[in-house]
Length: 222
Image 1 (cartoon, helix red, strand yellow):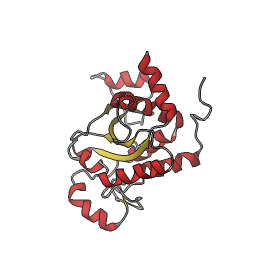
Image 2 (cartoon, one colour):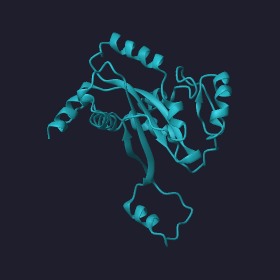
Image 3 (cartoon, helix red, strand yellow):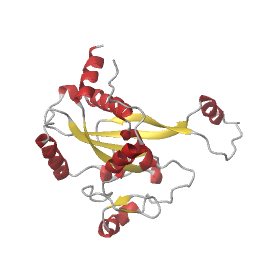
Image 4 (tube, one colour):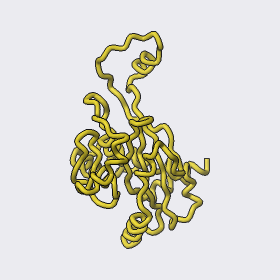
Protein backbone atom coordinates (compact mmCIF):
# COMPACT_ATOMS: atom_id res chain seq x y z
CA UNK A 1 0.00 0.00 0.00
CA UNK A 2 1.30 3.46 -0.85
CA UNK A 3 2.14 5.94 1.88
CA UNK A 4 -0.64 8.58 2.04
CA UNK A 5 1.90 11.15 3.22
CA UNK A 6 3.76 10.93 -0.10
CA UNK A 7 1.74 13.56 -1.92
CA UNK A 8 3.11 13.73 -5.49
CA UNK A 9 1.44 17.12 -5.95
CA UNK A 10 2.80 19.45 -3.22
CA UNK A 11 1.32 22.93 -2.93
CA UNK A 12 3.11 25.98 -4.31
CA UNK A 13 3.88 27.04 -0.73
CA UNK A 14 5.46 23.67 0.08
CA UNK A 15 7.54 23.77 -3.11
CA UNK A 16 8.88 27.24 -2.31
CA UNK A 17 9.72 26.32 1.28
CA UNK A 18 11.73 23.22 0.34
CA UNK A 19 13.35 25.04 -2.58
CA UNK A 20 14.69 27.65 -0.18
CA UNK A 21 16.18 24.87 1.96
CA UNK A 22 17.83 23.22 -1.04
CA UNK A 23 19.13 26.40 -2.66
CA UNK A 24 19.69 28.51 0.42
CA UNK A 25 23.33 27.76 1.24
CA UNK A 26 25.95 30.35 0.36
CA UNK A 27 28.01 29.19 -2.65
CA UNK A 28 31.23 30.22 -0.88
CA UNK A 29 31.05 29.29 2.81
CA UNK A 30 28.13 26.83 2.56
CA UNK A 31 27.30 27.75 6.14
CA UNK A 32 24.73 30.54 5.94
CA UNK A 33 21.55 31.12 4.02
CA UNK A 34 22.15 32.98 0.78
CA UNK A 35 20.44 36.37 0.68
CA UNK A 36 22.18 37.71 -2.44
CA UNK A 37 22.68 36.34 -5.95
CA UNK A 38 25.28 36.69 -8.66
CA UNK A 39 23.66 39.01 -11.23
CA UNK A 40 24.69 36.73 -14.11
CA UNK A 41 24.34 33.09 -13.07
CA UNK A 42 22.19 33.52 -9.91
CA UNK A 43 24.62 31.71 -7.54
CA UNK A 44 23.49 32.42 -3.94
CA UNK A 45 25.76 34.22 -1.46
CA UNK A 46 25.21 35.14 2.17
CA UNK A 47 27.12 38.42 1.87
CA UNK A 48 29.05 40.67 -0.48
CA UNK A 49 32.26 39.57 1.26
CA UNK A 50 31.69 35.90 0.39
CA UNK A 51 30.80 36.80 -3.19
CA UNK A 52 33.94 38.91 -3.58
CA UNK A 53 36.18 36.24 -2.04
CA UNK A 54 34.71 33.58 -4.33
CA UNK A 55 35.04 35.63 -7.51
CA UNK A 56 38.53 34.41 -8.65
CA UNK A 57 37.19 30.85 -8.68
CA UNK A 58 33.63 31.66 -9.65
CA UNK A 59 34.48 33.77 -12.71
CA UNK A 60 35.86 30.68 -14.46
CA UNK A 61 32.33 29.28 -14.69
CA UNK A 62 30.14 32.37 -14.38
CA UNK A 63 28.03 33.13 -17.43
CA UNK A 64 24.59 34.66 -17.95
CA UNK A 65 21.82 32.09 -17.92
CA UNK A 66 20.19 31.75 -21.32
CA UNK A 67 16.65 33.04 -21.01
CA UNK A 68 15.11 29.90 -22.53
CA UNK A 69 17.40 27.51 -20.61
CA UNK A 70 16.08 25.54 -17.61
CA UNK A 71 16.63 27.10 -14.18
CA UNK A 72 18.98 24.51 -12.67
CA UNK A 73 18.63 25.63 -9.05
CA UNK A 74 14.87 25.99 -9.21
CA UNK A 75 14.45 22.55 -10.78
CA UNK A 76 16.61 20.90 -8.09
CA UNK A 77 14.48 22.52 -5.43
CA UNK A 78 11.28 21.42 -7.14
CA UNK A 79 12.59 17.87 -7.39
CA UNK A 80 13.35 17.61 -3.67
CA UNK A 81 10.06 19.28 -2.69
CA UNK A 82 8.08 16.37 -4.13
CA UNK A 83 7.77 13.77 -1.31
CA UNK A 84 7.33 10.83 -3.68
CA UNK A 85 10.31 11.69 -5.90
CA UNK A 86 12.42 12.46 -2.84
CA UNK A 87 11.59 9.01 -1.44
CA UNK A 88 12.78 7.38 -4.66
CA UNK A 89 15.99 9.42 -4.62
CA UNK A 90 16.67 8.43 -1.01
CA UNK A 91 16.22 4.74 -1.85
CA UNK A 92 18.58 5.04 -4.82
CA UNK A 93 21.21 6.75 -2.65
CA UNK A 94 20.87 4.06 0.05
CA UNK A 95 21.43 1.27 -2.47
CA UNK A 96 24.16 3.03 -4.46
CA UNK A 97 26.16 4.01 -1.37
CA UNK A 98 25.36 0.74 0.46
CA UNK A 99 24.09 2.70 3.46
CA UNK A 100 22.29 -0.38 4.81
CA UNK A 101 25.68 -1.80 5.78
CA UNK A 102 27.51 1.35 6.86
CA UNK A 103 27.59 3.02 10.28
CA UNK A 104 25.14 5.90 10.51
CA UNK A 105 27.69 7.93 12.47
CA UNK A 106 29.67 8.45 9.26
CA UNK A 107 28.11 11.19 7.07
CA UNK A 108 27.67 10.18 3.45
CA UNK A 109 28.34 12.29 0.39
CA UNK A 110 26.51 11.66 -2.87
CA UNK A 111 26.78 13.47 -6.17
CA UNK A 112 23.82 13.44 -8.53
CA UNK A 113 24.69 14.13 -12.16
CA UNK A 114 21.60 15.60 -13.78
CA UNK A 115 20.57 16.85 -17.20
CA UNK A 116 17.57 17.70 -19.32
CA UNK A 117 15.86 15.75 -22.08
CA UNK A 118 12.70 16.25 -24.16
CA UNK A 119 9.58 15.08 -22.37
CA UNK A 120 8.20 13.65 -25.62
CA UNK A 121 9.83 10.52 -27.04
CA UNK A 122 9.00 11.84 -30.53
CA UNK A 123 11.00 15.02 -29.88
CA UNK A 124 13.82 12.95 -28.39
CA UNK A 125 14.22 10.82 -31.52
CA UNK A 126 13.76 13.82 -33.79
CA UNK A 127 16.68 15.77 -32.32
CA UNK A 128 18.81 12.62 -32.24
CA UNK A 129 18.77 12.31 -36.04
CA UNK A 130 21.89 14.02 -37.50
CA UNK A 131 20.02 15.16 -40.61
CA UNK A 132 17.04 16.54 -38.69
CA UNK A 133 16.13 20.19 -39.16
CA UNK A 134 15.54 21.69 -35.72
CA UNK A 135 13.66 24.96 -35.41
CA UNK A 136 14.18 27.47 -32.62
CA UNK A 137 10.89 26.84 -30.85
CA UNK A 138 11.27 25.60 -27.25
CA UNK A 139 10.55 21.98 -26.35
CA UNK A 140 8.89 20.70 -23.21
CA UNK A 141 11.64 19.03 -21.21
CA UNK A 142 12.16 16.97 -18.09
CA UNK A 143 14.88 16.66 -15.49
CA UNK A 144 16.89 13.44 -15.67
CA UNK A 145 19.20 11.86 -13.09
CA UNK A 146 22.03 10.26 -15.07
CA UNK A 147 24.31 8.99 -12.32
CA UNK A 148 24.60 8.83 -8.54
CA UNK A 149 28.26 8.88 -7.58
CA UNK A 150 29.19 7.72 -4.06
CA UNK A 151 32.62 9.35 -3.92
CA UNK A 152 33.58 12.94 -4.58
CA UNK A 153 34.97 13.29 -8.09
CA UNK A 154 36.69 16.22 -9.75
CA UNK A 155 34.30 17.90 -12.16
CA UNK A 156 36.48 20.79 -13.22
CA UNK A 157 36.69 22.05 -9.64
CA UNK A 158 32.94 22.32 -9.07
CA UNK A 159 32.90 19.32 -6.72
CA UNK A 160 35.43 21.07 -4.49
CA UNK A 161 33.21 24.12 -4.16
CA UNK A 162 30.07 22.09 -3.42
CA UNK A 163 31.54 19.93 -0.64
CA UNK A 164 30.25 20.97 2.79
CA UNK A 165 32.90 21.73 5.44
CA UNK A 166 33.45 18.96 7.97
CA UNK A 167 32.62 21.33 10.84
CA UNK A 168 29.23 22.09 9.31
CA UNK A 169 28.48 18.41 8.78
CA UNK A 170 29.32 17.66 12.41
CA UNK A 171 27.12 20.53 13.57
CA UNK A 172 24.17 19.40 11.46
CA UNK A 173 24.64 15.83 12.69
CA UNK A 174 24.53 16.94 16.32
CA UNK A 175 21.30 18.81 15.65
CA UNK A 176 19.80 15.72 14.02
CA UNK A 177 20.76 13.62 17.05
CA UNK A 178 19.15 16.12 19.41
CA UNK A 179 15.96 15.79 17.37
CA UNK A 180 15.97 12.02 17.90
CA UNK A 181 17.25 11.04 14.45
CA UNK A 182 20.60 9.59 15.49
CA UNK A 183 19.72 6.16 14.03
CA UNK A 184 19.16 7.48 10.49
CA UNK A 185 21.80 8.01 7.76
CA UNK A 186 22.82 11.63 7.35
CA UNK A 187 24.92 13.43 4.78
CA UNK A 188 24.96 15.78 1.81
CA UNK A 189 23.92 15.52 -1.80
CA UNK A 190 25.35 17.63 -4.59
CA UNK A 191 23.45 18.28 -7.80
CA UNK A 192 25.87 18.75 -10.71
CA UNK A 193 24.94 19.73 -14.25
CA UNK A 194 26.78 20.76 -17.41
CA UNK A 195 30.22 20.27 -18.93
CA UNK A 196 33.48 22.20 -18.99
CA UNK A 197 33.09 25.84 -18.01
CA UNK A 198 29.31 25.57 -17.92
CA UNK A 199 29.31 23.26 -14.88
CA UNK A 200 26.88 24.20 -12.13
CA UNK A 201 26.45 22.69 -8.70
CA UNK A 202 24.39 23.11 -5.57
CA UNK A 203 24.43 21.22 -2.26
CA UNK A 204 21.87 20.33 0.38
CA UNK A 205 21.81 18.35 3.62
CA UNK A 206 19.82 15.11 3.50
CA UNK A 207 18.52 13.02 6.38
CA UNK A 208 17.38 9.64 5.07
CA UNK A 209 13.91 8.73 6.33
CA UNK A 210 13.15 5.39 8.00
CA UNK A 211 10.50 4.59 5.38
CA UNK A 212 13.17 4.93 2.67
CA UNK A 213 15.42 2.55 4.60
CA UNK A 214 12.57 0.00 4.77
CA UNK A 215 11.99 0.21 1.01
CA UNK A 216 15.72 -0.21 0.36
CA UNK A 217 15.79 -3.31 2.59
CA UNK A 218 12.91 -4.79 0.61
CA UNK A 219 14.67 -4.05 -2.69
CA UNK A 220 17.89 -5.52 -1.33
CA UNK A 221 16.12 -8.80 -0.57
CA UNK A 222 14.83 -9.26 -4.13
